[in-house]
Length: 261
Image (tube, rainbow, N blue to C red):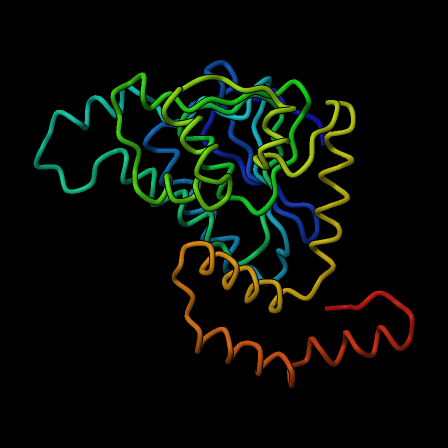
């Protein structure tokens, strides 16, 4: 899948069989997110969640960057109102948390640099495949911003305390090889192999049992947050032992064929 060069718009939804792709599409501004983009992202997440034919989501950007994060002018404008119930920061946080909790597996196709709040948006995906020229930085300390709680937790639980401190407190840029070393990237590839790498992973995920993956993804995320619902996880396990997916999986294994879920 190659980058498109349409006029700047909000996020675009593309479908290809069992795969959905959401593309951030403001390339002249490095796919900076506006307030209206947050609402559209939630709408698209809801559409994907309720479509049983979608088995995997890819999140990417148009042009030379994945995203420059949330529009700082919008943050500043909303910050002047101390009485506002929902700040720009909390609105963005809700979008990122919604992405993390999406039932289908998610891949962030990092076509370029990832900055500010979009570093957390990518981190909320289950997998991150990036080009070897990518870079990232979290400028909160330079801006005088205390980042929102769930974003800090995501950094700590996925990247570790030392890496979270380094990225948040120094606000220094790191390159793709370092992003791979600390676990931010799942895989790093030259740009000419990016689509191939994403396609391979998306095909694997789309072919696995959707309900089993949904339940295990939820349990893994809850474990990471220290919020595991033990009874619900145990019930999902018991249900899977007598469900249709395991019947098809065992039958396919015996017949030496790919399962059809």
